[in-house]
Amino acid sequence: MNFYLLSDDESSVSIVQNIIESDFSNSLVGVNFDVDSAYDDLLQLRVDVMIINCLEIFPEGLNLIKRLAQVHIKPHFIVVGPHNEAYKDEAYRVGIDAYLDYPFNHLEFKNITKLVGSYCQVVDKMAEINKLTSGIATPFNRPQSKHRLRTDRIHSILRFLGIASENGCDDILRIAKVMVDQNIPFSKIDFQESLSLNEHEKKSAFQRIRRALRVGICNLAGMCIEYPENEVLLEYANSLFDFQNVYNEMQRIREVGAQRGQISIQHFFDGLLQESYREDT
Image 1 (cartoon, one colour):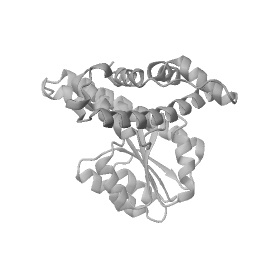
Image 2 (tube, helix red, strand yellow; image 1 turned 90 degrees about the vertical axis):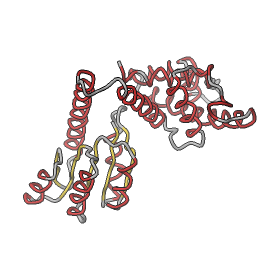
Image 3 (cartoon, helix red, strand yellow; image 1 turned 30 degrees about the vertical axis):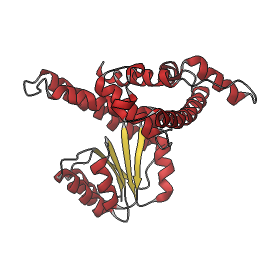
Image 4 (cartoon, one colour; image 1 turned 135 degrees about the horizontal axis):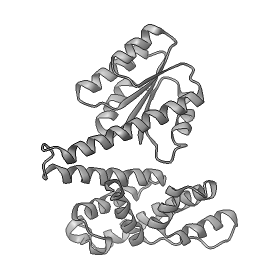
C-alpha cells in the first residue's frame, strides 16, 4: 500500500513514517510540505492513501483534495486537523475517509491507517472482480491492467528492499520491464536488441545492479534478524537471493568476518518476475 504525506509539521514525519512502515506491505512513497508540490507529485505517483497533517494550512489541504478530484485522482484521505467541528464537517464533505484531531494519538493513528488500508484492498479486489466479470472489460485492456499490476509490484519490492534510490535501480527497472513486456526469463533477454546495450555497457549496468543488490540483501538480512517469523521476508529471501545467501549475510551482520551472501543477478531477476505475477493470483 502506497502512502503519501502532506504536512506542515516536519517533526511529525518520522513518527508517521514509522507507524506506516511498521506494516511491511506499506511504503511512504512521498513527503511534502508544500501544497502545490504535493499536487504535482500526486499527478506522477501511484498513491493509495494520502495523509494530510495540516494545522496552519488546513483550508489549503482541503482545496488540494478538490483539485485532485477534478483531474480524477482520488486516493483515500486521512486528515489530521484542528479540533473544530466545522472543519471536520467540511473535510468529510469533500470526501475524506477519516479525521483525527491534532495532536493525534499514535495508537489511534495506527489503527486508522490499518483500517483505511484494508478498505483500499477490498475496493481494489472488488474493482478487479468487476473488470473480470463485466462485458466492458475487453480482452484488449485486461492485459494492460495486469501489466500495470506487475510493474507496480516490482517498484514496491525495490522500495521494500531499500534500493529504490540506488544507482542501479534504473537498470533493474529497465531490464524488469523487458521481462514483463516480453514475458521471458532473464536468460532470454537480447540486451542489444531490447535495451540497446553493447557488451561494455551491459557490464557497467551489471556492476551498478550488483552494488544495488548488495545493499538489498544486507537490508533484507537485517529485517530477517529483526523479524525471523515474517513470511514475506522469508519469501523474498528465497525467491530473490536464495535463503542460504541471506542466511550467510545474517551471520556476517552478527559476526565480524563471517562469509558474505552471494549475489546472483539472474536468480534475482527471475525471482522478481515470479513475484510480479503474485498479484494476479
